[in-house]
Length: 578
Image (cartoon, rainbow, N blue to C red):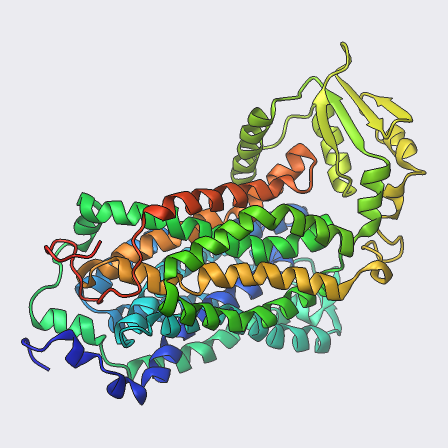
């Protein structure tokens, strides 16, 4: 290796043949961590949330733990800036070795945190600190992994190589199931609650929930051991040897228009659409099943798990296909399919998951005529404002309309908002036969008593009637959503890596990826849910991913195709192919 060698001398198929699986495996372990942590935190928040926040309001504690989960998403772009800069200055291997150590230790330490009863407000403060560290580390982890794998891959196979990183969501999901499932099934003995010694809880609720977090130490040990055996990226090493590295990757990435333009196009024309399609196809679909359609949580998880298992090979398929026909056409096609089919697919999910709800809405539509009615555009801004209010913990005004909203949403009953009738502030129409003026819970109960809405959940299970759920059709529909996910996610790593020059690649690609996934995608469940709650239409939440994906379809047309680019390209050079 010397300063006069070309990139081809560093990256040859023969050299990579014996070690490419090690490179892919070592680089992917960090994203396995990410998804493992994602699933265990979301699944176990109900158990440990009450332990780290003041007692007396379990619902508030649960919401606080979920809001805290969002902190990890919000800081990811800042981690991209911090660790992206280090990665471009020092090296890929060193940086994503640091990020995985920070991420792994932060996850494991959650399992060791003292409770609120033991150390008071220091407990949530420490939990917030760990979530921030996890988010910052994740902001540097994915960019490092994608860049490292792509810079080892032979020309013409980068889509195939980097697509393996995208399969780690499946591994993280099933790893979390493999750890949490047996623990919950086996730790059923009753013991005093750490939060309230007078109350009795299962041993899993008392302390067993800590084990899945502590297990991450094993993942960390394996990851660090393997990554220590890796060499620096050959293309980065060659660049350093020839003295062509960037001395200021942040300013070069974001203050020079030639590169900033590509960063913005990558965010709006690729990462934003990829983020919302990913989160809508998997996480919002699960929320829609279990919360909106009242499918039992266990049933919903297994339906999504089967669809995820079916969809996973398509990550590799579309990664390889992108090496042949291009990254952009596959990614934008996935976004376009989402735009065109989300509404009919989710309506079909309702039909096969909870037909009683569909029948009730068709036979007895609920309409609220209110003085608070706003035009569709104004309703959109009000729903966004409501989502922001939920983030900061603001309470809704105690108006009759908001009381009616809360009542109907609590029972899972869709409704339509219309302008007020005469001078009456609020009137509820139940089909064409019944009318209730103002808000009165008992009057609402009586008006809905003999309608189909009493059948949308089984009185015994408080969930959708399992005997009427068409599980094969639901798996098919969820698998289609997952295939959209694989279309946008399979090629994205190679696409972003190829857009930027080696000297600022880590920094430049990480920021749009983590804004697209951490902000546009990560806050999708909250924004979409606010649309549903505020407007009463269970499908209105889909307009958020539809609009963002449509934007990506348009802006993405201005991005160049990258599949044939050499990774040592430089936008400052005369032969830059962009």
